[in-house]
Amino acid sequence: MLVAFGLAASALVAHAAAPVFVLNSLEASISVIDPLTWTETRRIPAGKEPHHLYMTPDEKSLIIASALSDSLMFVDPKTAEVQRTVTGILDPYQLRFSPDMKWFVTAANRLNHVDIYQWDGSNLKLAKRIATGKTPSHLWIDSTSRTIYATMQDSDELVAIDLLTQTLKWRQPTGSLPADVFGTPDDKFLLVGLTGGEGVEIYAVTGAQPRLVKLLKTGKGAHSFRGMGDKRHVLVSNRVANTISKIDYQTMAVVDTYPGPSGPDDMDLSPDGRFIYVASRWAKKLSVIDTLTHRVVHQVKVGKSPHGVWTLDHAARQ
Image (tube, rainbow, N blue to C red):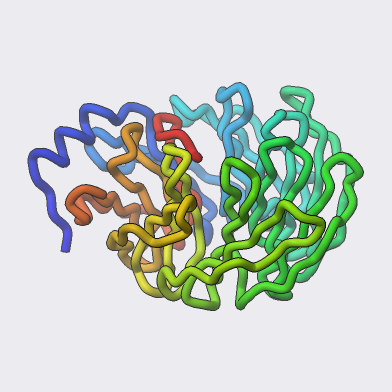
């Protein structure tokens, strides 16, 4: 049930400033949403199948990756003006910068490889293309910028790539349809969402080979993670269960559950961490959830199959 009330509305108005971007993956467009009025103010044409997005290290550009167009669109995160488009980036389904900002990595979902690019502050140069398992899905890079972790959605694997030598380090079988992967700030554990299962696999990754330590039940279709900025909690969207779970990754337990309407997917947070902005993939909407009241306080109509969600004015990510 959609609920709007004074406290939630005033808190959102007080904190929100930058636009919220939502990628409409099956409509080749980007919805730009005003978080003061919760209306779509613009819809920007994009390449085919824009799924994920990431900020450049200088925070001057938001990179939208369009997988079927083999392109990256750079957009101003404050004004939503298109800055430039880079072509020839093969199948950039998911993307991430290394913490040291030297490398830009993409997962080619349909072409079964991970690409590592050198980044000089403005330009990309392909350094290595690494064949992986079937359907690379999501990426994580450890805090030392030494290891890339990637899930293989259709071969049910987690792989590690040595970023210094740019070679595969190991493969680890996982549960069904591994999607997003999240690393704890101390680099000791990885969390893997099982879209074909009912929860999150937790791996210890400090040794030469990973070790499965726990299967944490969160809900059917565990899919996408979002750190809450307190270095203790992470959210996971359960796309089939229509819920969002809050995980304490110090105790490796679910400590809260929120509504996630109509196939919740990618998420972002308000600056104070109180509100979750989540793509309701099957409803063509962005939903806003108040974590204090556990209620949906806003829904905004966007395009078909909304996926990536981002705002410059958000809480820290770990």
